[in-house]
Length: 159
Image 1 (cartoon, one colour):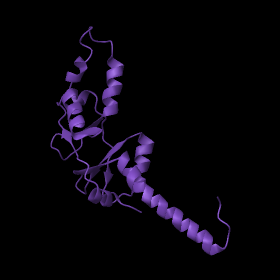
Image 2 (cartoon, helix red, strand yellow):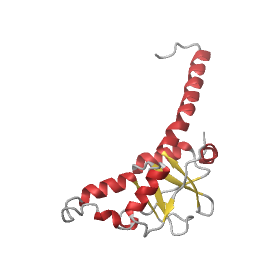
Image 3 (cartoon, one colour):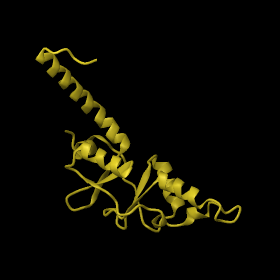
Image 4 (cartoon, one colour):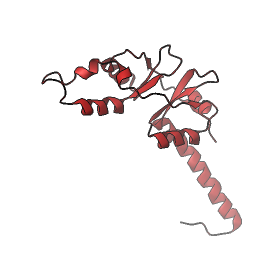
């Protein structure tokens, strides 16, 4: 079973943090430049306070569309990320398994889970892309083992 620490050793996804007073526009610009789907809101770059994903920005834009006067529809982008961040942040640890994180993502409908060390400080992030990328070889190995067990048992494999 693959551990999150193994994924972080192989994957070099940037962990991008912003402070709670960073504007939504600045955070979205950072996501575009870094080619990432979320930023972590943190006062010190170590402790996660909140998380803002592209989905949060889009959902909030559609929720507030039409509230501002004509021509000022995007004014909400000047608000701080603290206005839309999800908090508290659901994290995982280095010793958790890939399946543990997949369960967190599925259960809470998250696409990103920050990774914290034993002191609770962020040391990386796992995205749904990472989960898929590292799950496929694991599932292929499980399938091969099952096929070999069936072959050794003398039973006919299911098609």
